[in-house]
Image 1 (cartoon, rainbow, N blue to C red):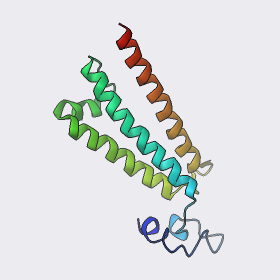
Image 2: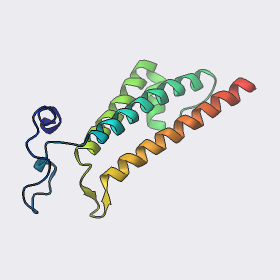
Image 3: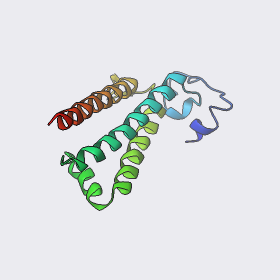
Length: 135
């Protein structure tokens, strides 16, 4: 968290000093594109939460059983947990965007995959709403 807060104001290291310094603590500056990707993912998460609530009001069921449990309690609680979990995951992925997961796959690819998945999910939910409206 320190690298996100302090590093964006006063970046000292834009990359590791030595080849063996490959940890996430070796960098306190992150490329602006990761901020853009993170913000779009969070906005899509908010849209997903709102569309999910709208679909549930029209008789749909939440497919994720864990989120369905939160939804059965309270809509505000559902939205807070959904966006909080997404935000936490996005922050962690952004911190390690330059690292390779499993030794091969750049974490940045995972960020783009999450972004694409959310865009597809929003498109599907909009399609469901249109289908319900036409019925």
